[in-house]
Length: 272
Picture (tube, rainbow, N blue to C red):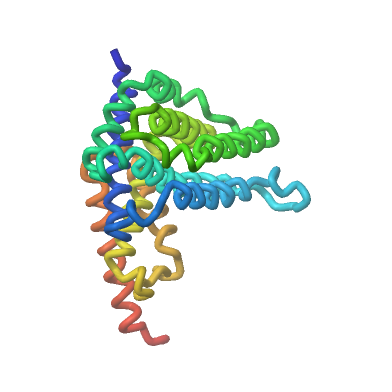
């Protein structure tokens, strides 16, 4: 019988896949036919590279300090593309009917003892970055490499299955999901924190699309702060546990603030 926490985490993660699909289709309704696995891998590589570059150990020749806050943000950003990779990888079984694909992911995760064990033991995977800075940073860098290695497979393999009868997609999904979860927990992000931040970033990206981001009409600076900073400091900081309507709440709060930003742009206050 599965641990209660593992079941809860699996359900939360499925909700994240549903949100990711919503964002993907909002950006481009034909996205799964126009992008392939290599596109998603490139995006994951970029985000993880930016995260690793936040570590002082990576630039040993400089005198910069490590930015663990940015490291966490980049890893959450990488999750958007890892999940999109999974949706593309497994979606071919259902002619990219993503609703069926997500149901399959839910069922498949429930069968993976490795993933459920990782959920149950998630708290023990954190490193103390203050006490073990050198070892910690090397471990994080190596784990980021393991994530990429789990995604980099021979492209010919992904073109050669006959109706997905072999186990390549399932193996790649399981391995890459485990490696990405390990990286997330290693940098000190709890599972609940991951879901909260990921949901916030996802909703912000949808909000940007709804307000002219692709057309260059969106205002990203909100009273001297970037919108993602406002999201983190003013909205997500007040959420301690994920809940059912969390994305609706985040979207409403963004909408309320953005209306003030637009009004200020249109009618700037005169200096006294």
